[in-house]
Image (cartoon, rainbow, N blue to C red; front, side):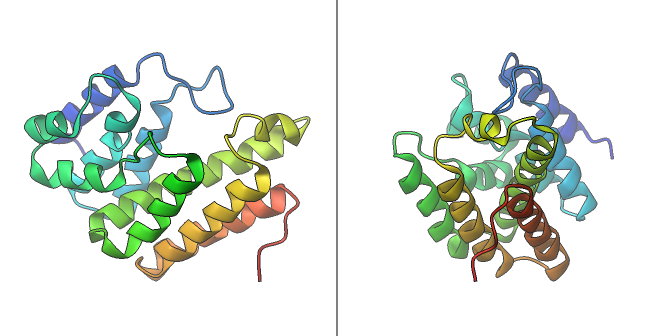
Length: 191
């Protein structure tokens, strides 16, 4: 699946996320997340611009040297538009940011919905792995901004909003990942 555009996005993301690690881990490089997101998007059959956006989806949000304008200048309008739809405003409080993400799903492009779903899918899969392998699950939850209940509640709201927009195969995979995290954390799904 080599392309110059994907290669360029990979190099940019590797440089942008250099030195960053995943939440709840001091050893897992952050870049593993956008790489997994891009692999999910490729498996789902998304176009190159969506895969590039998946690789770059957190650079504006999490990397000082990146702006929406820079993404547009270096990767074009299609990629920049998707990244812009996914970028959270870090000036907002956690609950407001996460609610905005849920409320924004109906207005997102199909490609942005797919990238957001792949992003959430990988985060849920990673969370389930962390919970499963932890000696004490409370240490996993300590790495999150909010409580287990609030984190999983907002995750459920987002998954439900995304499912309405996704191909059923993608939606089912995302839903199953959420159920797995809820089961691993000892929380019954909301009725």
